[in-house]
Length: 370
Image 1 (cartoon, rainbow, N blue to C red):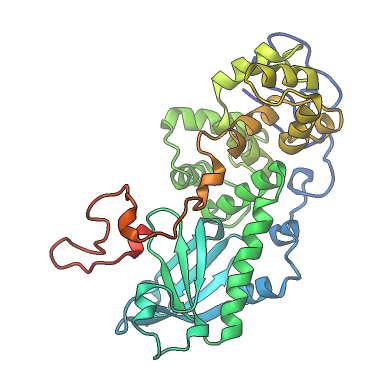
Image 2: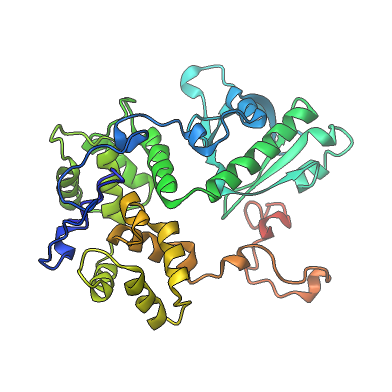
C-alpha cells in the first residue's frame, strides 16, 4: 500500500511503487519518523480557524456566535432560524426553533458550496416582499448545483453585512490554502461530521459513515481491509494521522502510479528533470522553473519540497488538481456577453426547468436558470 504518513518530515513512497529499489532517501524512510512539531501530524491539535488566519476577523466572530434570522419562502411562509458557523470554519448550521426537542430540524451548508450571495431583495421571493421588509437586511444565499437558494431576513443591516463579508473571507482563505492544509482541513471537516462520540478518532462504523458522506462505494471486505491496514496503532480506531493515510489511499490511482514509475529515475521520487520530461511529453510548459513551482504547490512532504523532489502523493495531488481538470476553470464564471435579450440565447436545459414544483400547479420562475 502507499504508506503516506501525515508526518511531513517522513512521507515514504508506497512499497509497491518502488519497484524493489531502495527508497530510503533522507525524509523518505519507510520507518516512522519524529513528529514535525505543531499540527495534527505532530500529535497536537490544530485550530482550523487559526489555520485559516481568521480567528480575529470580526465578521467570522459574529458568525461563530450565531445570528437569529428569518427564513423566507413566500410572504406567508416565514420561519425563524438560527445560523451559526461551526468551529471547522466551513460548516454553517441552520437550526429551526421547534417546540419539541425531537422535532428540531437541523440543516447545514458548506461555505464552499455557495455560488454567490445576493444582497437586498434580488430573488423572486424577496422582490415580491419589497417595500414590506427592510431591503438592506435581506440576502439570498445561492448554492452551486441543484440546491435551492436560501432567502434570509436579518435583524439588522450590520448583521447581514457580517455574513456576506464573512462567507467571502472564508471562501478566499480556503481557496488560497496549500495542498497540505486543504487536505488537513478536509479531513477535520468530515471527521467532525462522522465522529459520533466526539473522541477525535474513528471506529470502523464511523469510517463507513464517512464513506457514505463522500459518496465512496466500497465493498465491506475491502473497506475493512483498508481500515485494518491504516490502523497502525492496532487499537481499532483511526486517529488523525491514520485517517490521513486512509484518505490518501482512497485517492490512489493505479494508472497514476504507473506513470510515476515510468518517469521516476529511481521509482521513489520525481526530480525536477523527471517532472520536466513528463510535462514536455504532455505538451505543457517544460521549463525547470515551472517544474519547481509545481513541486512547491502540490508536494505534501516538506523534506521533498525543500529538496525539489515530488513524491507519489504530490504527483497524485497535482494530477487530480483543478490545473488538470478537463473543464476550463475560467469558464466556471459567466464569461459570455450577457447584455442581450433573453430570447437571443440558446438555453441548454430541460423545457421544464422553470417549474418550481409540479408541472400542473407549480409556479414558474426564472431562478432555476441561475
